[in-house]
Amino acid sequence: MEYSDLDYINKQLILLLNKDARTPFSELAKQLKISNSLVHQRIKKLQEAGVIKGYSINLDLKKMGNESATFTGLVTKEASYIESIVGELKKIPAVIECHLVSGKYALLLKIVAKNNDDLRIILHEQIHTIEGVGSTDSFISFGEAFSKNLNV
Image (tube, rainbow, N blue to C red; front, side, top):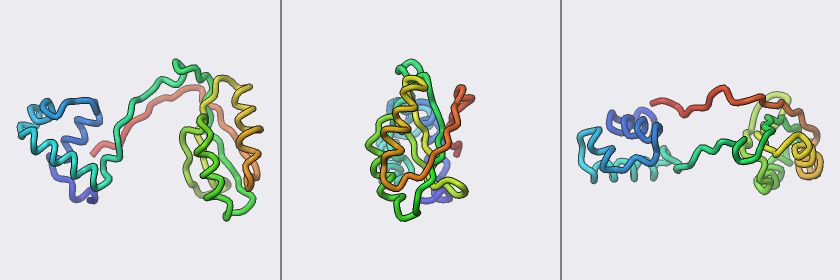
């Protein structure tokens, strides 16, 4: 299913779920003036097509004890290491995002840590010890200005 395949009802369902993914199907049906079963069918099809990949909660990382957030560019020794490096990065709980990117870096990571000392340990003892990691550059986040999902 591509964006062009999304009709008005699918787009409205996505918009409503984007505001609150916990909205009951009955409430979605009421707002869209359609049946509960149609809501269920549409959402099931969106999930099967991979348009809706899942549901999650949005945590306040600071309230979870993480005072430090960084975006870290990672340079590999060789491109052939990328797949194994990504596999090892998945095992590190503090690495919460990993993106394949172009340019100077092969990977861009989002790392959360209790503080800067914890970040140093994560970088030096966990990330830099992964075979194939060449170097890293970290950009400290002073705070999230905003975060949003794509509007349909």
